[in-house]
Length: 475
Image 1 (cartoon, one colour):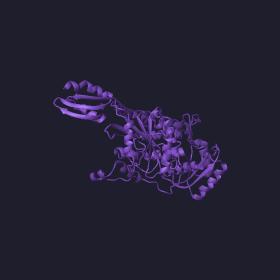
Image 2 (tube, rainbow, N blue to C red; image 1 turned 180 degrees about the vertical axis):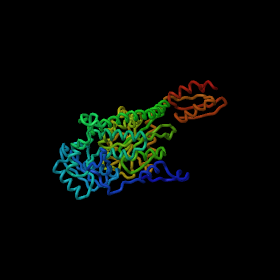
Image 3 (cartoon, one colour; image 1 turned 90 degrees about the horizontal axis):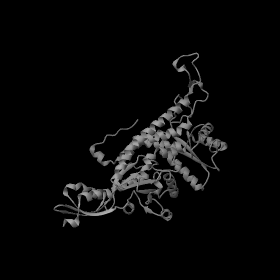
Image 4 (cartoon, one colour; image 1 turned 120 degrees about the vertical axis):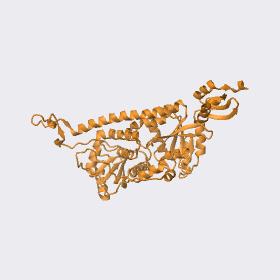
């Protein structure tokens, strides 16, 4: 059941778009106490993820104990974002995950005891499990088991709003589900072959195509259809991107770890009013807004989907058209949470994903240390020593934003041509474009037109040259 709200015109003026999105999201919450079905109870293969009371388990294979604890803490935040109540968390030290049960048969029995004592109905593993590991661990602990990838996909499915975002998430979910489909064992009633379905009877029966094979075929067909839809949807994004490039408007992309404050920074710079929530993957759909530097230069700034350690490859592939906003930018603002226990790990995880996007690693990158009002000064100093170009800001308080805008102004592609021309009054559209797209140094209105002194991009310079007269020939 969803809750509907009616607002007057006055109320709408008081609400930002993001505020209404946040209220709508919080209006629908999971109800505690609903158990997850471990057993199939119908002929429907799909079993809904109802993450209510969960126990977390991770395998510590490398790094320090602090790294292992931070990874499990992040898994806890993911689980809570999905709507669950975390009851306990366990970390096991191993050289590598057990190929059969992920944590080993003995530890799996201990995990079963923890599940029984806490009353949990779900176990979440901090890694991507194979279908065999999922099956065997479930059989041991006797409750539903999911892995980190399924958890992230579930969050994406909850938070996707646009048609393109929903299609991208569904494609990623089907890619994950395809090798993990479960049949009904030796239940041959789920098989039909020959002409038996038509009621032919004796002589027409055969083993035929099993239900699980039929499901796999339908999933592949659905995946092919979704890829075609996403390709078609990306056409409009490509068209808008082409228009910006044709007008030669510089582009800035905000990238960074999830919950680092990217949307808050976009709101602070542009007043976009997008949804801001203290949760992982709060916003998935990219937002592009126009902004101006202190000197009046126009540029676009795009907020992109957040990254996370071990971001499922299915999502990277499905969101490739969205992530292309980063590859097409002139400047990347890499936002990192200065108050996080491991900001260096966040930087490394984001750069790992950016490395998979063709062309992104070649774009100029500025590290923006956000949440400076909550960060320790020694942490900020440590990051600034490691990173070459840093700006310290607080999107919440506005600290450091003027300095950031100065950096953007300095790093954006320079305007190539400085002109001083007399533009006829009937071409006021070119004067307007110079204000929007260029850097106007002076404007003087005379009898025959407007004397424009400005720095402009090549395309506008060519048009001005065609219609304008050099100032020295005017007088």
